[in-house]
Amino acid sequence: MTKLTAPIGVFDSGVGGISTLQTLAKTLPQEDFIFYGDSKNAPYGEKSAATVTDLSKQVVEQLRAHAVKAIVIACNTATSAAKPALITAYPDLPILGIEPALKEAVDAGKQHILVMATPLTLSRPKYLAQRNRFSDQAMIQSLPCPGLADLIEGGEAQLPAIRRLLTKLLTPLSDRPIDAVVLGCTHYPFIEGLIRERFAAGTAFYTGYSGIAANLKQTLQRQQLLRTDAHQQTVSFYSSNETCAEIKLYQHLFEHGIELD
Image (tube, rainbow, N blue to C red):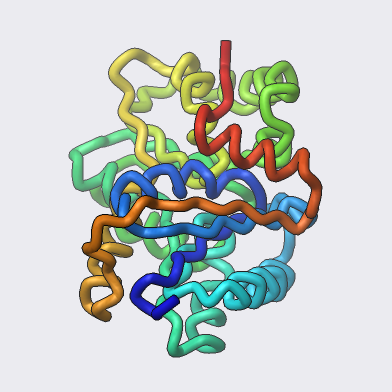
């Protein structure tokens, strides 16, 4: 295996990054991917920034063992808390991170934007600076969602509890004129349908996936690491839980998502 044909590593605190992986795999169909979910330590969004950084470094070492040519941090919390430290620690490895798609919503002219994310993501200076940057262009409300990512880790079995938590989180906002929702945690798109039910028809939703996919493609092209051969893509899954059930869950979510009905 040459560096050109090496796989791309993708990681998250658990299953959430699989939603990002779906977009990356479709955008780059000739690239191989290795996904690593740190489900043993999920969720990251309610841990300290230092703990998230340490855990992220451990995951990067796991992916480096597979000789990946680039790494995508498919976790908003790990991106905000750990990305700078990872880039410093691994200067020869392209490391990209997903960001809350607040700019995308503002650029689309939305005026009343709700950002749903983990408590840690919403407390980090990077998000706060971005929110302040756009505060004169739109009304931006940040909604911490403690416990939501953890429930989504359980898949379809947790749907009743997920619905109850969404009711608790979103009912107080029912009278707000929200025209855009930013899903600032990669777990949340798996239940986008349930979240959409709580808002008016036509409310726009943003994830940031198209941005990270385009960034990855441009980075690989710039470093002459983008595959152009007729290669059949492979996607492999690993988890810190190291159980067959966990890997089957990852594969099911990648292929089918969470069945909401």
